[in-house]
Amino acid sequence: MTDPESVVEVADLKKQFSADDDLFNRLFGWGEPKTVKAVDGVSLDIREGEALGIAGESGCGKTTLGETLLGLTEPTAGTVRFEGEDVTDRLRTDPELRTKLQIIQQDPYQSINPRFTVFNWIKEPLDVHNIGTEAEREERVLETLELAGLRPAEAFASEYPSELSGGERQRVGIARAIVLNPSFVVADEPTSMLDVSVRAGVLDLLNRLQREMGLAVMYISHDISLLKHTCDRIAIMYLGKVVEQGPATEVINDPKHPYTQALVSSTPIVDPDESRTPIEIEGEVPDPVNLDPGCRFAPRCPAAMPECREGEPRLYDVGEQRARCILYDEELMADASPEVPPEMVSDGMKTPGNRAD
Ligand SMILES: Nc1ncnc2c1ncn2[C@@H]1O[C@H](COP(=O)(O)OP(=O)(O)OP(=O)(O)O)[C@@H](O)[C@H]1O
Ligand SMILES: [Mg+2]
Image (cartoon, rainbow, N blue to C red; front, side, top):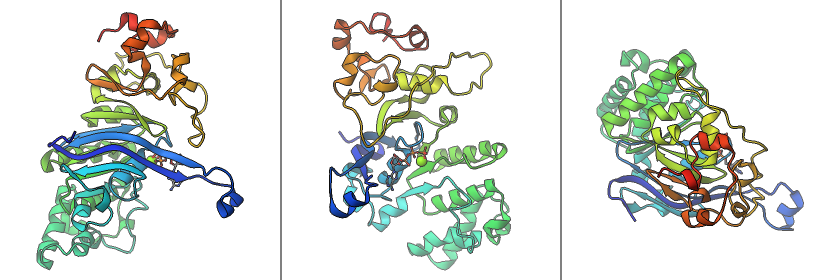
């Protein structure tokens, strides 16, 4: 169902890459073609003025999800809706749509052309999309520099990227992303390359823009404590799938999926009054090319049961959260007696017997 308030809504989005590293296979088509299911059936929506966080280990598909829903790479399957309209087929080509959907890159050193002044770098999208008169464009650039906290705007406008600090460069990246007045921005690890001392300032800026411009922002980050403070909702990904989603504080304070519990428990604690027992995730992330049937987290899950290997679990409603785990299948659990380690139960996981919701 389409939510009228959604800015962006994706349904069953999939992106697969060819992963054939065997030359003969590639040249002659021998053997089964190998594919990486980087994004494997993701459904999400983001509303006006909302911040949605995407977290998960390296390689789980966060960047691919962001790039696919912006039209920077073509989806293998699924639909993308923008303001209620199915735009899957014109995401990559419709110039007006391209102005509405923007990205803030992770690396402020690589993402700015060193030959451009700040002024020209931020003005370029206005020129490309032929927006306003020359004077209006110039005014818009200065106004956007102010908005991005680069003051006095005239002084920054004439600088080259090499003259700027990392934090200033990232503000330039943000200014270029917002100059066309977009509705939706993907911020892919926007502060991970920055000095710790300037991270909070850049995040505050993004938060302020989100509120003042009514921007919908998708934050991609490894750092779930950052997402807790920045986002309204969070989705946790594991091997191309969303395994848990819900309000940010609930997902982090009371995670439901065993993977989220392990991820949260291994995050450094900022609050000294809070204590957590880290849950070790044993084993390696499975090879995304050769996935076993059943739950993708089962090979590493401390709460795994034989049933987990049988089929891909669906998302279950658990209070305001949703978790892709059969521990929340009431019917199945009524007949089973899972051997859940005690630390998992005390750390927020509910066995059917003691489930509070
Ligand atoms: N262009 C590509 N060709 C082939 N495989 C790709 C390509 N881009 C991504 N992948 C694979 O898709 C999967 C998801 O990658 P992606 O970069 O989206 O993960 P990520 O969650 O953003 O990781 P990180 O946290 O390290 O940035 C990985 O297995 C990756 O190797
Ligand atoms: Mg990434």
